[in-house]
Length: 395
Image (tube, rainbow, N blue to C red; front, side, top):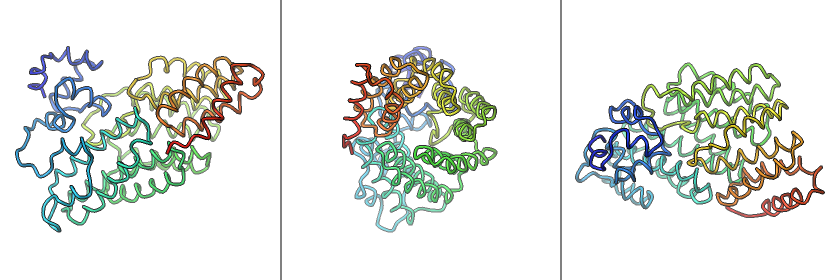
């Protein structure tokens, strides 16, 4: 990677400045001590005049291999089809372990694209990859099969996430159950804990408070076995939500503080799947606001949202819409209709652009809290826009 950086005309300081990271971060990438977060890959690959697939080889210190059975560049550009995968080697022959790296590349790309494009454009590709992975289990050796279970679990989890965002909560839970089966089969504690935490989030989405709490506290029981600091941060932020649902303010805020401290840590070792890479300080701050709102501390929640949303990472565009929608509810509950409409209009624009049903659901909830101010022209106009958006079929 250092050679590629120099050929592209960058010093470590120059590349760091172009990516808005520290020079020491670039140094860690080049020394193999960590890897870039997925949302940085498209930008980094462009700066180095390469592809995400080739970038993965650069970060490993590998040269491109002639005659590799899988052309990862073409796979990322056109997507993996069943026919391509089944053509790898003779039918019934053992697959090349590098196939798993191809799936990891594709998942990284889909996750990054989801944050910008929303679920409607990606759900078909994600579900296809679950089928593709499952077709290869019988052709893998024991070690490769374990890695296939890991990436299969994470593709199923991604399908659940996309289904949730499209409003298909039952479908999302079904995908998560499949993800949990494969996570347990893989034996990877990080993947298991991550999937259980996500199931808690799903229960929270459907207002199943008892299930959300039970799963959150179940997930955090795995923390002693989890290596990724990002996953540990995600476990604590979800435990904070569970404690807030139980009305335990002190424990909820303790979990948020722990999550924030973990989100600020540099990764000790490379995580091949970049699990919970979204769990950065800005994300945890937004979760703190949501926890405060659950506890009924709406003014404090509004302050937290305002502190973080102005500098929200542009890579997480879709999530910004979700948090703006939640800020809308908080502002209304705090008795500030003008502030509520301001963030509501911005959230509505993002929801339409990314086709996020989840953000629309949050805006529908905020509309209920704004009803007392319907006589205000701006509020009435916003409520009408939300009502129209609720009937839009985006899938």
